[in-house]
Image (tube, rainbow, N blue to C red; front, side):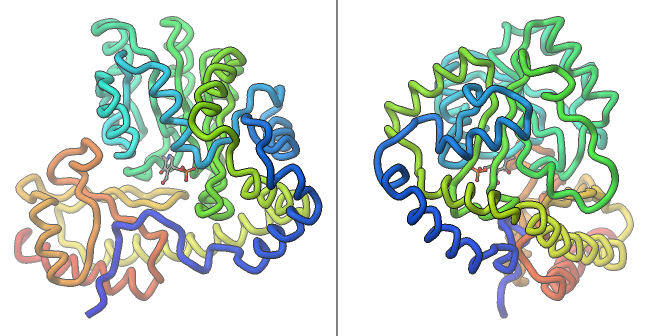
Length: 358
Ligand SMILES: Cc1ncc(COP(=O)(O)O)c(C=O)c1O
């Protein structure tokens, strides 16, 4: 029996525009090979940097294009090593590990269906030592799929101003929206003095390109550039130039529409399947985009123990505790598997849940 993976938060293979990228990579080298095959600007391939700067209406000098956005997160975390960082919980597990490895004290801000709780944020700001920054994923959050409401976004920005708090808004999924209106980015609300913004072409084009970026206050951009030079001298310009060729040809929006369509049917398949198959007492988030569904199981069920039995039954997921969530929570990714596999995987999980909930 093939194992069905709800653990892999990566795009389904058909989301990747393989042929077009092959063509863009060749064209990029032919057009600008002497630049992209050499050492070059540490801040990123200039034409792509300019394209990103224009999209966000900022000076290109504030844009740092990195080898995936996680690399930029490492630089930011290293810059504040030894300090304290606030994170919403649950949150993306890799940043948690990076912060831990740098000896950074992590302060947890709880969240609910509307995203991080601003009252809890205010409490954390008034009590512990001043944090270096707040790390938040306000839209289609990894792992919960939840989106911070507009009202709460305004409060977070107000608190950032009041407490001179730097906020890192990590937004790789925002454009992967299937329906509904997008709330304003924290970055747009604030104007960029207190909010640093990061995003990536991993979910909108292809993660293997390893092209992510940060929009930073100017001084911080220069500091992180210096760290980037000491780490890799120059980022992978050929990947960045391939992305630039892709967007230059006008492929970005049509590709995004295509990807949204492919993922929307997966989201729908998962929501329909859990609604049909799961017993009473199991709750789940209803994301309008992104990759993930968040499960809240009856309190007596430990998701890590359930995972061991699920693996035997041919289906995997990530227990919520890996993201700092409660033991009875779990992340189901619908991004990688086909709609048929989603239905079958949910059936396998439901068969394990039914006897417990009965
Ligand atoms: C919230 C979040 N931030 C950052 C990343 C990493 O993105 P990149 O591929 O640009 O390093 C991911 C990848 O899954 C993610 O979920």
